[in-house]
Length: 375
Image (cartoon, rainbow, N blue to C red; front, side, top):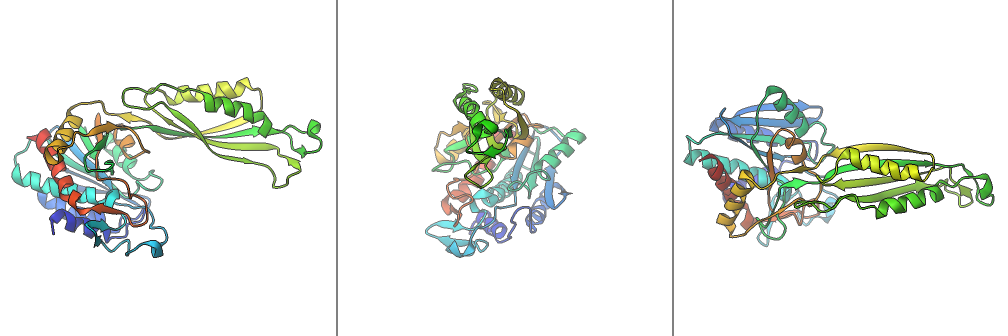
């Protein structure tokens, strides 16, 4: 069994359902400390974070990831215990196999191999690991990033081990992610008997034309890296439960997934302009879940793309699709952030797995990237 596979199985066996770490990071400390890493545990609430750094020179390349996993779902639906690593048909099954304990194991072993082969390499290497990526993400990576910013530690490159590949290892990397912003719109009316609409004011009727306009609005055209910004309603809450009552208010939940072609301020301003035009009374509460980030083609993407090509023969695709990740926090203190990891087809699912044939090549890609940047 390869060292990377063995470490992956060891981490999967630790049932670190968010925000639990269950000793995963302590195991990483045991492996990194002998390599010369200074390891610092940053506890925040129930969340365990790890910052580890080897060297003081620039450039600093950081491997980032999370030890927490999502809940298993109904365990009886799993073909095998989700926290007992199991091999079937050339695949390794277990919660976290794809998202993202394999990536963490591959990063650690890659660094072991790289530092053994290049003891006098230039620059520095870091690890930023949290147990709060699958949860609220308020006590995790963002806390460590704030601490690093306060101390003036400059990150030059960061690889986040999220499962970005689609069909084959290396066919896609993420050089950015869209921002997410939610709104809760409350439209006010006057409750009344449905047989006497002249004595009431139906907020659902008031809201409908404005909602149709919001649906039809083109928010931006996107850019070279991003699809156009999208606006989607997720829930509409109205009514008293009785079919003969006009409600006094309706509540609409919606979400923007937005690119760097738009700003939070501009999107909010345009929504309010559309609502104000329709002349009804409303309240609107905004929640910004994360800003978009983008790493244009540069040293990091070129080094990683070359490593993928050398290991797999694949010309990788740069993409900004998908949901949010902790890359949005790291991008605030690091100019080049790229996400790369194994195929993501089984993440968060029953019987999550990774093809065993991808595990050592993933490690090799991380090692080759270090060689391309630090030798």
